[in-house]
Length: 134
Ligand SMILES: [Zn+2]
Image (cartoon, rainbow, N blue to C red; front, side, top):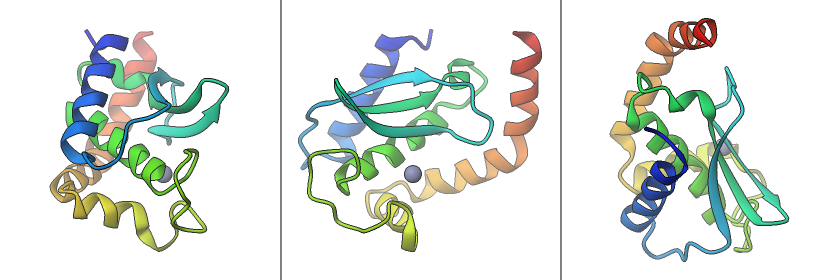
């Protein structure tokens, strides 16, 4: 079951494996929203940095690599200094493709391709199915 514990465990593992030099400080993760065109977000709250993953991804038909790459994307914002206490490395979060460049550098190139294909071929149908069953 994709509950909070499941999510925390993966979050910690991905951080440890792919971002080992960056302290995982003052940041938490949760499922949130039922978005069609947004997979995750990062923002600052009173509790620290919040990384959210689309709640619809709790459905088991959403491949795990989609959740992983969404998490990794938001972690990259964090390490670039957006919504975290780290120094800001860029003026804008996405300009110049900085997130994907960082992801590729850290070994997510294949996941990015998988994600692109999945979004194009699977997501909208699955989104409609999930919405109709709830
Ligand atoms: Zn982003």
